[in-house]
Amino acid sequence: MIEAPHYTPAGAKRDASFALPADYFDGTVNEPVLHQAVKVFLNNQRQGTAATKTRSFISGGNQKPWKQKGTGRARQGSTRAPHWRGGGVVFGPHPRDYHTDIPRKVKQLARKSALNARAREGALHVVERLAFRAPKTAQLAGLLGSLGLDGRKVLVLTAGANESVYLSGRNLPTVEVMPYFEASAYDLLWSDAIVVEEGALTGVMPEPLPEEPEAEAKAAPQRKRPAPKPASRRGEGKAAVKSAAKAKAKTAKAAKAAKKSAAKAAKKAKPAKKAKPAKKSAARPAKKAAPKKAKKKGSK
Image 1 (cartoon, rainbow, N blue to C red):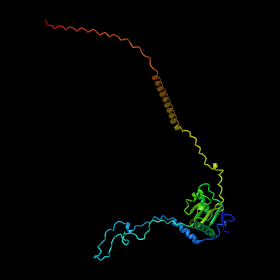
Image 2: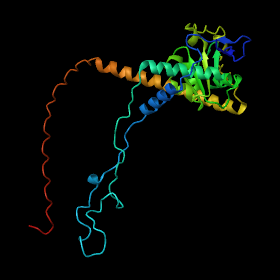
Image 3: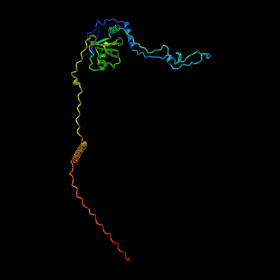
Image 4: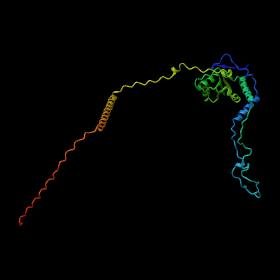
């Protein structure tokens, strides 16, 4: 039976070690299968988009560079031949699919061999529970530090999809977090040490963490607004002037509104019709007699 060191959620080592399941951890490591699984994994990561141009894809070179005989040089038919600078490439890479299949049982055997290899080396650590209420990188870094895994490539395997643990380890360059059932043989061999949640090996999913009773107490208290400071002596006069001006403006507005309402009421009321005055017969004034011209002296 293979055993692994057992730790508490805080990172303290327990006295008794954890007995790994005998059905899966039997100590056998099949190296040829591991090599095949790693090769298939790396092949499937390739995009296969590398491409080079043959002489048929390069423009130019349609004309013979010089005549066949008489120059003393070797005969040439095109400047785009492979041995010319700027010519085509022979046997270069072209777009292709590198996808490789592997039998399911071979894949499972490779994963089992990788876990056994890490367990035999003592690089497999079992943590009772990864208790993360919220994403916290410092908490995960502290846990790995208490396990003595600082500066090493660590693969953290959770019992299920744990978003808080994933987000906590996303910012650590040497830490990879994933569910236990998603880890491949390549992932297990990539890491220097493996940290497994106990529920992933026993099959018992951990219960959700209880809510913090002091959550409300820890909440930030509301800031009280400071009481208004008493006005200084210099500011008292300004404040009085401002308040008087405000009061005056209010009374002016009220008077204006009353005036408008009175004008509206007057418009609505119809005025009484006045009696037309009698027409006066205007007698034309009599024409004044023209004055007689005085006779000049000496006139007859």
